Length: 226
Length: 350
Image 1 (cartoon, rainbow over the protein chains, first blue to last red):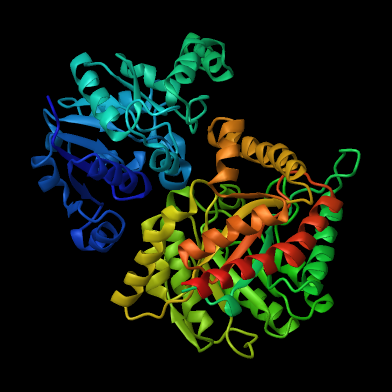
Image 2 (cartoon, each protein chain N blue to C red; image 1 turned 180 degrees about the horizontal axis):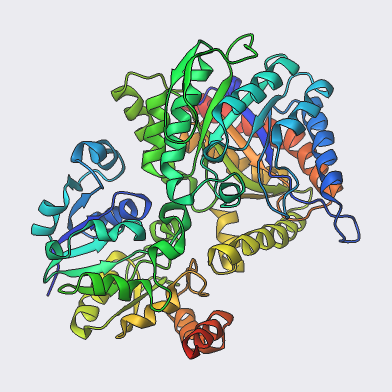
């Protein structure tokens, strides 16, 4: 399916950058903040003119693809039934400045996206846009085929959804590198050599192929054994 | 339009530990004294502001910037004495006011407080605050500080501090405390600064500076909506200047990378690649090179964003005293005049 209408939940740094890229790519874009429209209308009108500032319910009802770009500690503020049967990109990471203490936000035994998927049981979660810095996302978006185009890791448990999101990532200005296991998202979480790095597809694939040999990969493997 | 005659130029340091010529490190105490010396040098050379950061970590020497600034005050004449930033969230606004009002007295009105939320975690547990309250702490404390800054009796109550009832706070200053809010680029922070009618300084630590253009527009529009005044915006970014361009690039790469990677270890981001560094140096937010290269890039940023002030963060990583001082000299004697010249020529040709 070709997406036409993109809904971004979260009007912070990442949400604004993604809204700008989506507008540039020709999508109809809705964006919501944590409160009323009035709290974000000036921001949206100034930073991403053309995007429609709205609230969650309207955004969800009117979008083919939803992106969660809120602090990880706040995803449970959204009722799971609101996102029922929706395809949802999880662009979130644990980040202390916005999330507070880690143990209050995440359980230690699975990746953040798996916890998000568990919570939104009836939605399809695909993880991407989480591992590149927001200003790199803004500066590095390039048309397909551009030299040294940067790459984003896209993963989820529903292959069809992952492929659709991969095509969306392509239209947003990045080469998708696709996996079909949501748990593989660990390779892009804070601590991974991919977190905060802007790499082209060749280099990104290199890291992924050799992930088990990285310090972070070894840590994860050791934690799993326990 | 940039008013070249009113442009201000600052230097800022986080108090990185200074290196000896043989690569070994000086003590934190020596590094602190070096800053006082550099403040004196910057003042003599006509730099407008020196900013000193607040950190509570082994890799930075300064946890109490006002104390360092108080030592710079009597050995300088014109330079403004700023923090970069004061972590208001984990401080007491009454104490912040008192310390800066004292510094303002010591320096004949040259104190400048820069309030921020901080980008490190250490101060929160150290002073007994919960990270979960990151946003609320700053909002509440800024509200109280704003009342104190008016220097009348204050009546106030909040969640994180004892209430004040018709309370005078001393010493009173001779004019009022010049106050900035330091922001990192979240739209919420910009709007908050505008609502309080404060000057803003934006920390641009990565990516193209031009992307902040709409954010500055947002500051203006938010102030207008709240009937608040606006001021020319200031920017703070990292840099390194040496006589020779290649030398500057190598020194900066080694030191900025070491700094970035060390912080990255605790935040979970990947080490800085050479490509990333080169990008930042060419079109991003590192101002690195010989004086001409750096002047061109600073002039471009000031022009693009219509700034009133530019602060260069110096001394990142472990640089020698000679490298730090030479950079300050080049910045003051070559870069700043050249930036003004470039901008004046640009204005004349408009």
